[in-house]
Length: 447
Image (cartoon, rainbow, N blue to C red):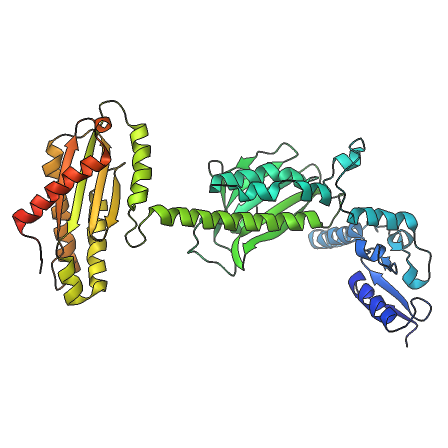
């Protein structure tokens, strides 16, 4: 049995002490155990761990000295004074008397404190685990209905991270796109969607002021001149292994140098909030968009038309087209449903190509589509737009060079006042015109 064991970390020391005690070996009477890094956990362990606290200041001084030897070889270096006695924290694991003040300080840091003495300036500037857990941050994130609201909530609840100088949330540009999956590395560019500051720096809250930057810079403000040194913590933001971006916390050099349980849980909150928002956005999109063609579905049509009508000016006309693919059953039965789907997508893309700015393209179901617009329309648009659509479809069919012809029947109608006719009535009349067009051209089956 050794007289003493010096461990590379307090975690190792605590594990060793625990195992020795369980095996009936007395610590420190039989074996002395010493740790390294002076953790909070070691200071309040049942057998308090004697540990040596590494000097961040010494490491920083050594780094500066090294840089100076590179920049100015041969220059005089000024030694950094190290007080080993000040860095050693005695505990019961080496037979010393535990420092009660040091143990109590670490014990208090580990407590779940739900009430604070706000008259104490130091406590007022800190946010303990209790205040963090008692906050409604998670509920606020969960209640976010849109991506903008989610980012705004992350920005607002950033106060729970104090004390800090600046906090940045950097995400990939298309973080809402659930089809773009990244498991390794980072995209070429990133965007700062949220930035909050306690030192008067410019804030960012949402897409409008989002800052695009090259990922190679890590952070646009990383190398700017500062009156006082800062320490930056870069932490990945991810969910289920999928990269979304990273968070950056800037703190003053003299503050607690390690990230605490509050920040680690805060990042978990962010990860969950962003993923939930992505899922909501995805479901919202699927509820209004036809997956095959990218056109609106009927639900999306009513949602979007309500918005269009609310923005309409007095005197705006309503333009409606109803389109029906010719011979879909023949194509499906003869060439297979894959080819039928190709025809449907061709009709949809042709209709989108014809659409003007502000008009909406809708797949109402099967092989039927609508084109709807509100604005300055004339009666002549009815025939002109129908002719334009037929020409676009004809060119698309020729370019596709399929063993079948791709064509569609169309009915267009203009109503002088969009506010005096219901959308369903307008679609019904346009559908009747489309049917008459189909009958005139006998397009029940197209080969």
